[in-house]
Image 1 (spheres, rainbow, N blue to C red):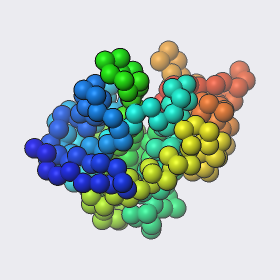
Image 2: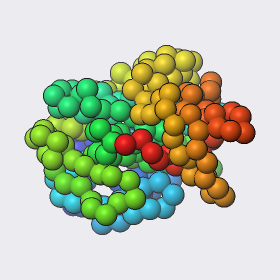
Image 3: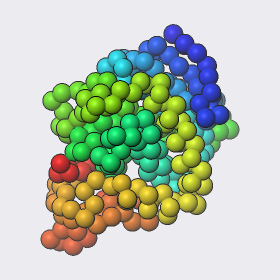
Image 4: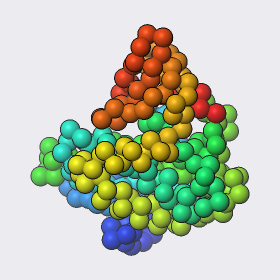
Length: 253
């Protein structure tokens, strides 16, 4: 059931009691001709998903929200929005729970950690809209563990309540919408990525330390040296410098 239609930092917002997936709803809206920006949130997801097709546990009391953007930048640099979103997520959690702000870090490519445990994740999806004049759409899905977190995950998980901060999904979404507004302005449709990249690196988990990287066909370890100008991970191992465009990072605890 659609609960309300409100504005978040000047952006339209549709809130639901339950959805299959906020990202899926945003994508369906884009295919139907909806032009962003538009926030879609749900108290509960029946088919939440994370990166690489993984299921996203959707316990009550957590934040599930997606932001639909229409042509937020030239298409070639649109993947940079993952760093914009990660910074906004870091900002929002630090604003809502300042006592844990010093413990927060961003994990490449788009998770948020408290200490070494995942408290939030981001799923970026994009699609060319050939059936209308929008061009292409980008959907940024956020899942924040406010009150609960899954057990037995491949990577350690936690939630804000467990970390000692009581934050409602509504409070988190308001802070996140404001932070996204600021960070998108900083990004300037890709022209400000150097500034975004510098801010992301200041908050990066594992920077300058040895990490393990899992690729579709292999795993390797090396020193996390930074990001290149496109946001690719730079890892120096025994064989030299490796540039990683997609993969999973471990060994940050």
